[in-house]
Length: 215
Length: 201
Image (tube, rainbow over all chains, first blue to last red; front, top):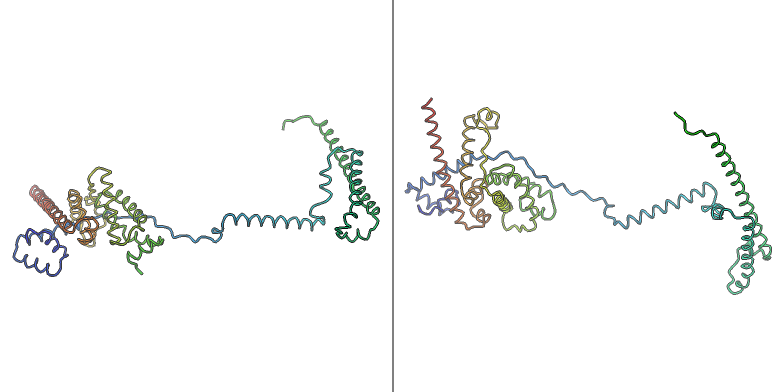
């Protein structure tokens, strides 16, 4: 027993079964050396309890609980882009319609683009030539239409169907274009007048300007 | 309701981070104590605690429950301490507990009913034990730490240190025997010093 230290250490820590405990106890009763050994081991175990550890402050940063993901974060990017585009288009369409309702004009003003697309600086002779070409083209189309309609026969609009005389229709078109041309010429004339006024005012101001002064 | 380590480990493995937080809260002080008593320095021990739990978290899926969670954690901690000692190429430090000056000790937290003299004596014994433990071979010191301060069974220590059961008992016996001799010698020296001081005064 005295040479079997493992049995003593098991007894000291009370990690032996009942039979082993009884055998060691019986041995200690008769062995002074082992009694002293056991006593010394128990004493040093008590001494070990004196070893303090400094106060510990946690350095661990707890994991934050997972935040619930908003539903819109799960929508694919392409769907978000499509929704944004659709919203923009609906808004733009609403704005155009609203503008048309407020101003009483059609959404795409007919007169404005025509004025803007006519090249500046056309002479009356050039405009007359354009008008003639347009008239010839319209006349040719209108004369060619009855022949094409004999087979396909799409229905004419109601007011055109009542007008049997193509010459009368041609006359209406010519009148319309004449009025449009006169209106356009008047607009250009008044624009020229306004530009002349502005130019005159600039000259007047330039003549009276003496340069920057000391303020 | 208090959950067992095994339940918390299962939940943490399934992604419940709060369960892992609870494991940390439960085990960080024992892990710190083990690291501190192994390394002997507070800052290093705190670093080891943090790294040990990070490694444990990363390795949770590999932990199959073949050992107790605490034993697994102790093994991670001891490996980290061993790496630290190897990296620093030096023996564990002995950080002597602060202040045996009575003025300092008057402000120190003492146990209920403990006099200043008792507190001084306890501090001195703590420092003496720390020195004696630091001088032990690593394997003996580790076996004593796990047994005395963490209450592991012989078998758990054997599993943690990956050695036979009989080896654990031998290391414990040898380590305690060495400590006993050193502490008895120290006590004899202190008694001699006190006697000399009393005789001179």
